[in-house]
Structures are given as C-alpha cells and as structure tokens.
Amino acid sequence: MKILITNDDSHRSPLLELAVEHYSRLGEVSLVVPQHEQSWTGKSMTRFSPVHVQKGELFGRSASFVSGTPADCVNVAVHNLLGSRPDLVVSGINAGFNMGLGFVLSSGTVGACLEANLAGIPAIALSQAFDSATRNSFTASYMIDAATMESFRSQTERVLSRLNERLFSPEHRQATLGSPVTWNVNIPFHLTDQAVLRAAPLGKTRYGKVFHEEPTLEGGSVRVFAHSDIEKVPDNDPACDSSLIGNGCATVSAVSVWNLAGGHQLAQSTASILAAFTG
Image (cartoon, rainbow, N blue to C red):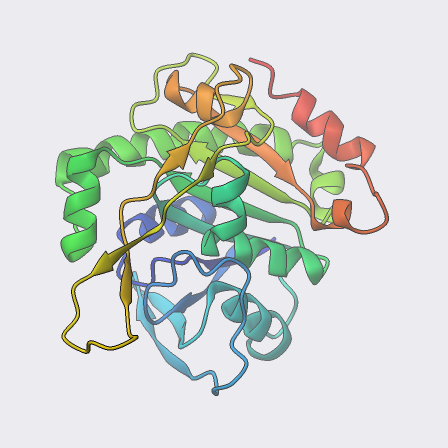
C-alpha cells in the first residue's frame, strides 16, 4: 500500500513522527508537508503566488517541503511529485482536536484529506486533544514534554490499531481503499474508554468570536484584529464526537465531500465499516 502523509502543523510538529512511525509499518510512505504552519486554512489552495517545493530529509527519510497549504501538498504530490498515485492519504497528527462541524470545516488537517477525496483517494485525518499546558508549550516552541509524548505514542498505537483492524480487515479493505471518504479520528488527552474507538456523528460544535481588536498607532479608519482564544459553542448531544471525547474515548466519523453533490448518501460499505466501531 502506498501512503502519502502530510499535516497542517508543518515538519516542526513532533506528532507528525508518530503518524510516520505507525504507517511505515503498513506500507510505503511518502512525506509531503508544509514548510510553515497552516492551521485553520481548511481546503484553501494557493492561487496568486507560486508554490515552492524543497527536497530534504525528515525522520531519516526523504521528504518534500511545500510553501503552500495542506491541500496544496496533496495536489502537488498526487499530480506532480509522486511516481504513482497513493492508495491512502494520512493527515496529521494534528495538534488539537478537529471535532464538530465548525472546526472540521476550518481544519487544514481535514482539508488535505478532502483534497485527496476529490482526487478519488481515501484519507484519514488524525487529531490529538491537548491540555492547556501542552497547548502553551506547543504554541511557544513546538515542544511536547517527554512524558506526554510517551502517553500520546501509546494512545496513538491503541487507537490506530483498532482503526486498522476495521478499515483494512479482509472484509473491509477493498471497500476502504475504493471509497474516497475521510475518516476523521480524534484522540482525547487521556484515553480511558475501554472501547478505545467509537463511531460518532460530527457534532454541531461551532465557534463564535475568533478575533480580538488590538491597539494600533496607525489611527484614522484602520482597525487591527488578531486571532484570539476561540469562543466554542459546544454540542451537548451525548452521542456526538465532542461528548464522547470528553468521556475519554477516541472517535471516528466518516466525512464525504460527495454528500454535497446531488444529495449523495454515505455508501453502504462505508456505513458498514462505521457500524463495526460499536465497542
């Protein structure tokens, strides 16, 4: 199996290595990642400037560093860089959750997967929830302390082993690789649920205020606004992804761009795979 791995936090994220470690055991991995962090870019693509690609090394293997967005990374990799199309695209592991409709639509991690889906390639979006201390450390220097990283590594293996058992079992493998949908996986900060991974619909979690106004010396009609702590509007449905994450379980949701076209529904094979994550 040929696997393309990308992310939206750039090559500096230590969580990227966890995805590479795991998926290198499943197939032949290619790494094409943003040169700089591209969080909250959704599925946007570069239009009015050239995209630069630089070859280098990452985690002891060849990698390509792209000046654009995660969706740019996937498009340029699939259509320009790779010798053959990947069978699967993996995006992440994202620093922070991507659960609920508002955050999924804004996520560069998920955006990379949707770009893969438009090319007819299935994808997996991986996101790891943080506590405030880990968030502050990562934001300041892309650092995660050793004990937390070891916990994340252990949780990642448990969750992805469970995911692989279903997606790539003899019963489901053909359907998984033949269905261009995104499997959106969120891992809690502390994984406590014995089921490890449960199917969940995307919640209606959304956000309110995103920007705060900053003082400016420019005066006149110019006002300056900066990205701030986001006002989250949660979905309290106990069956949705955010509620299950809050209860210590990882979640998986199937996201299909094809549902937007002509009222398509999830394929029966995809629904069948989701039904397997019942505990």
